[in-house]
Image (cartoon, rainbow, N blue to C red; front, top):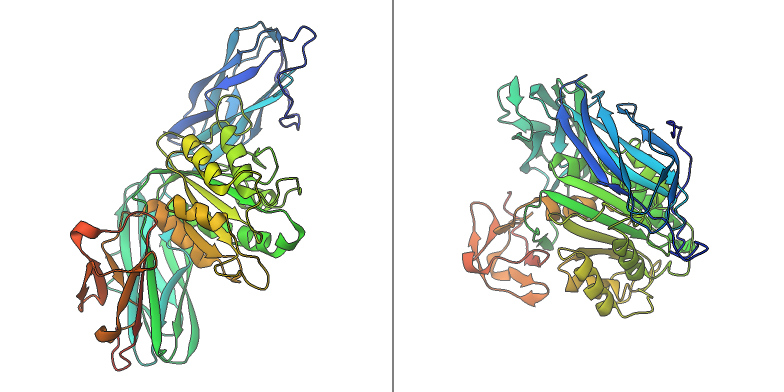
Length: 506
């Protein structure tokens, strides 16, 4: 019998089915590929079963069985040394909570030529409270000197047991909390409460603060950066909204990163923003997972990442820096290869879920350079993932910039999938990922709230760049309210430009 072994550091080889002397080969599969143990009280053990299958047509020799990751998961069984064609065996895995979220891989190695190493993702939760402040960081926007501006963050229990919040204090010149809830307050899992914040603008420039919220989260105190910008009102302003796709509970996020030499600083920006992106996804209570793909074959670097992945931010940062290949500037081709291998025993098996919103974030400073046309690749991607939208972080229209060529191909693909396009030329990408979180988690909006009070005679509104009149003005909210029968669809962009009524504060 095969004894339990420590992990052998292996990966998919990418070999094809050929290899047996008689043309017959074994094929190793695990079922399920993602094992979710659910949420359980601390120290309560629960068991799930994984089936190890030989779906090939010759005998499979099994060489190791192990768990890679959290010690919250242990194995009860051994495996036979071999499985004949069509034969299967089962492995019982025990989960005993040690923290709020635990993750590991069940790893089986064999002599299957195409996939000698197959992994099943193990996920489990302990019933602990956990506080998130969303969005984080939070930007109150712009205001004029001598004016006040208000906003709000949400305090969210992203844990699996009731959370007790005992206080909320903001520290920063001019910042205050507004009508805070009565503390202590108890939030059930997935429940949230708004916390009003305000600033009185005095000195010009960036104003920063820190919000401290105390609770029985294991961290004790959760801290969120808050900022605002005080400036004399400009002559003209622009505000916009990209309509959310509509309140998805699950999302599968594919990240492609161009590996050409000019991309080093962009890879660093992407890695630096991932922690806030992951935090806000978690605070939205979405069930999310990410694969990063840079290789020609589309196989994920570092496997499927999720809130259960140990050392998540480090693994993402390492994944975005891969090896340059033949398709390194053909992001749509790599995305297509990645999704093709998201089922069966493919290297990305378990990534695509039928009830999830698929988002592809494609990052490049070059035009899309696939052998096939962008529109044919979009059709392929939509066939594999019907809910897919593309977010391109690329050289902007019309001509790119000094550090990036026009992202042609990516821009058109984003438009064809109801996606969005961001400029890779900007030094700060924080707003990109806050907006992407909102696109995935929020319900469609029925209004656009403006940053400044407009002179109404100068207010112009466009929908995806075309003049748009299906709205009314709400002076009390300083907002453009969309007509009920003309609410923009997910991914559409509403933009307002106007001259500012400099005598008015919000």
